[in-house]
Length: 111
Length: 112
Image (cartoon, rainbow over all chains, first blue to last red):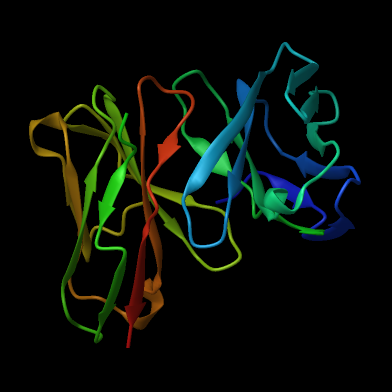
């Protein structure tokens, strides 16, 4: 079963623009993680945000978490063609629980 | 540092045939996961190992799927017999502790 739901399912932007992807989930969580998957490849971990954190930055990535709304957003600033990939959010309920992945957002950045 | 290694990368078989996938995790990673990923979907956990112990196999269809992680290092996932609906990408991931996961490139299985 998949807990996270990413929105939108697909997003197409021009290079240099910002891309925002959202994730909603259903149950309380210990942490939420974002992963990127290039076509035909495995997933790559981008960033982890814990339930007691509200915002986190890593390079051009900014993640927010609103536990009251059970939602998170991933912002990629100044996008590049190389950012073209699918982006998944994954939630962990307890400190020892399994990761539950959403269906992903397919991002296309046109040069 | 080498990443998670999976083989084969691609496998095409006829239905009812057996198939096996192999995974070598990152050295030192105690936790190993097998996921199934259907087209356009996120990964879904099949089994999680802590060292050589399968701590969560609740999503593994045990009538046809089996897995092992002898000596707590590399792991094999087997399907016997394969069905048409098993066509998917099988991903292996490892983690030094139960947090950030490192994924292999996956094995794309096509069942004809």
